[in-house]
Length: 282
Length: 233
Image (cartoon, rainbow over all chains, first blue to last red; front, side, top):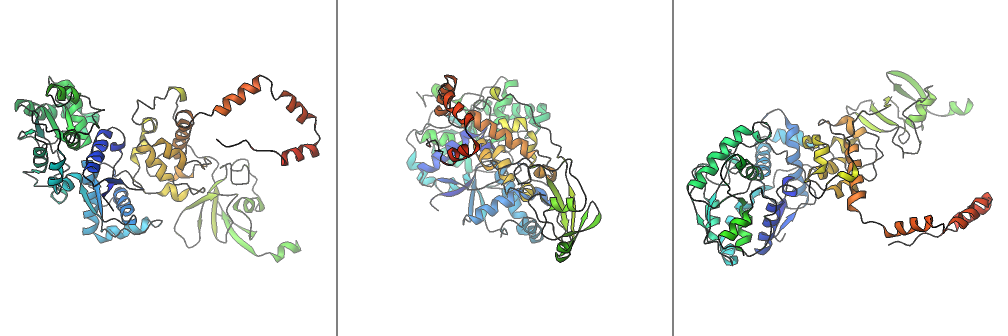
């Protein structure tokens, strides 16, 4: 396949469409387009930690089986939650062939999943394309101070980590290519509060105040990440603070540096205003 | 009786009671042969209305199966029961007030339990119409209403999907919402329809209609057979 087989996940089709649009545009520009799978299923969003509950492993296994049936060995995800769930489910059945057999028997209407598909997060793909990315930068973001935020799902647990769990650098390396000034962020691997946003927003508000507060203190103009839930939490819950820092998907910044006008439509804090202030957009 | 003696008889169990019935009957007619009279669970007898949902097991097979009683042959050793009704509450909505442009996912808002889908595919396996039920639930979950409506087009609302779901989803009501939204907001409006309604109002076809009303049955059949279809597009 020219490019990569791509698993979107539900949020990328609704609330996080900015991320999908910008990632598609960036990969198209890099000559490695993301090709959406013919059939795919909601990953379940949260990795089930119950050992005897195979029912909750069915969805990710079924999706990876679809990739296998499309004849692909690599499957790329954008959403951190989807990445983490698919990756962990894949590792689990590799370590526990009995679980895989049980699920294959239950899914007797479909071919057996052979556990040979590899799950990647887009950042792992981009990491290997730095030279190509550098060549595509036409609008360097040199006036912008950016700080990366990894959250949990790209780094934990260790078997699902795309980088060093304690001292990751993939986002910093990619951000430096855009010409922006990258600001170190000691809070970058802390949890945003995740699903507590549903019924314990006080927890999320506290986390957001600390994470965004630190970014502001260090002079960041924008926070950059790739998880739609972190994105929602970090932007939405700033309403309880005095801050107004746009939180962008890394691919939105890349697209901007590539001179592609895409994404940035569904933000709770308008990033376009910030880019105009910084003379990045007219 | 001589004729029936020639036929091979099979044994079926209806709500636990054993009956001998001739081979080759549908489940529906086998139950009638055994003496049951339908006051519910029976409609068109042609596989279209979805009223005769039935669940059964076969001897030597651990699986619970389901189908339409009017479309499925009774087999030796079947354990049978008819379902009079599948309870499933329909979400209320005003079709003209659904703001599908502004709302990221109107399907999820009306049926939030679809987020509980674990992709077990039991709904698809239970569908007598061979609809990809799980796939339309998944399409709804990601806000792809057009796909949900297309995939569910052949649904006859028998409800079998919704009695097997471990996530308690009301599939067939969800699918109906998708099709209503598609009809109201997604499909192109037919200019022919508006033109036709206008012409009807103006009485353009009154004379033709009266002619039809005065025809004999034979003449009507001839006209019907020779009718021309409206051009597509």
